[in-house]
Image 1 (spheres, helix red, strand yellow):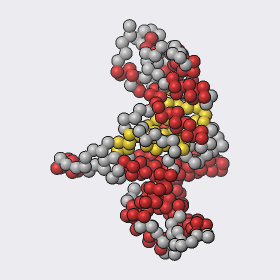
Image 2 (cartoon, one colour):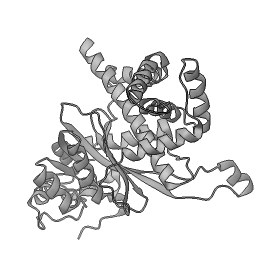
Image 3 (cartoon, one colour):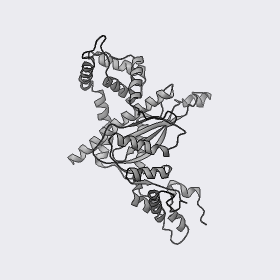
Image 4 (cartoon, rainbow, N blue to C red):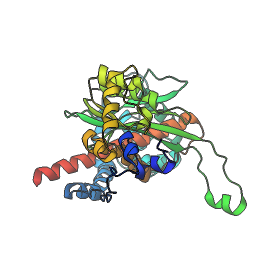
Length: 363
């Protein structure tokens, strides 16, 4: 019997049952030179260079936002008795977006917004009022079907496109501890570790947008989140195409939902010792048999599994731009911070996709 080592199971030595069967025999193909990753196209390179510049410029162009604030306040105060409203929802969300872009605090952002809005004849919220309104708005964005025991928040993107969304699903952790490495290194002291929140995201492999996401504690598994995220995305109006996931999501329930209920193709990897049997699901059995019949590299090409890495790139971009630390005193505050990061990140990715499409149209 062929012994499968830990090295064989690593990404750089990933094997299917076919590879394990021929390993060490004359049928084993020679090692292939790993191809370098695809470089960005000219359109993607342009978007990478300019998307954040354009996005930040649009957010900071106050002259374009002031008419929106005034119009919304006028509508809110029409026919109202007593003290008029001073702050509209669009104003609060604009201030919160600026706070997220600059990784700032409520106090600093409230002072920044006050200096700008006062010069245009508008009243800005105090930092305490900004915090209250942020809590109201962000909590209202969370799905009513949230399970308080496992899922802290779940939401689908409101940016619905006509095209089908080929999606990849994955999860990543965000740190609740704003650690100070110098204090730990020099004095052996510092903030206590508070754990992590997990962001489970359904990512568009073409645009890089997160079309649905859920926030849970660090001990919640990945597989049970596939169905709720797809349900939220479909309910919001997104058209789902192919679904990519790693082996953690390859349960029978997930295959039955994606392939049976939604009628979509579900592409996931399996263990090297997986047997080509249905085990109660013909949809999973079909995918398993393809996995067992082909060498790993050929299976990746035939199944299209090579698109799954785009979901990992989404997390890499999110953490690179907006950091992986959540500065909040409570778990509920950390959840709101993570929602803000995700929503602002989606707006940035939408701008990047817009630049790519405009560049293609001009080419």
